[in-house]
Length: 121
Image 1 (spheres, helix red, strand yellow):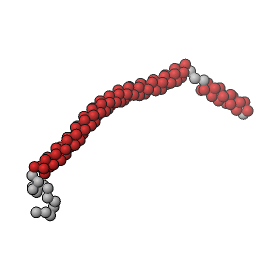
Image 2 (cartoon, helix red, strand yellow):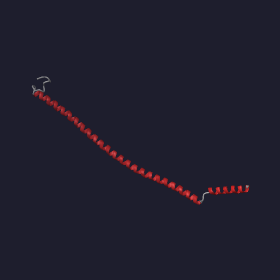
Image 3 (tube, rainbow, N blue to C red):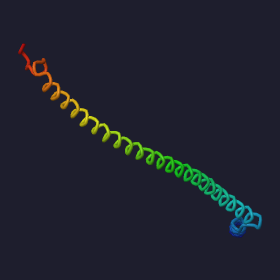
Image 4 (cartoon, one colour):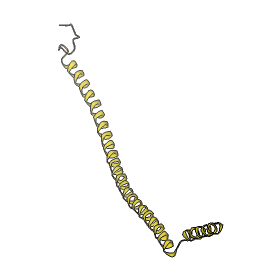
């Protein structure tokens, strides 16, 4: 009985040792699985690079568009400043003409209604 047990024990250790030693085929399959994983990772990286390049291009286009709009806005602001200054000068000159006209009218027509204050007849 002890002999059978010893043979059985030896056989199971032998089979266990053989079962854990990878064959060339196992090594090849393992290497191919690792290569496949590396290939998948590389493809994922390649997709990210392509996506990043497209995003960079889009970002640069947006920057260019924004800079063009800023330049256009600065021209509009400069034109608005110029027109505002011209308008201010016209107001000043217009008020001067009004005052001069009133003064001339009052000198030439002293009896007119412009010289009378509210409530006077």
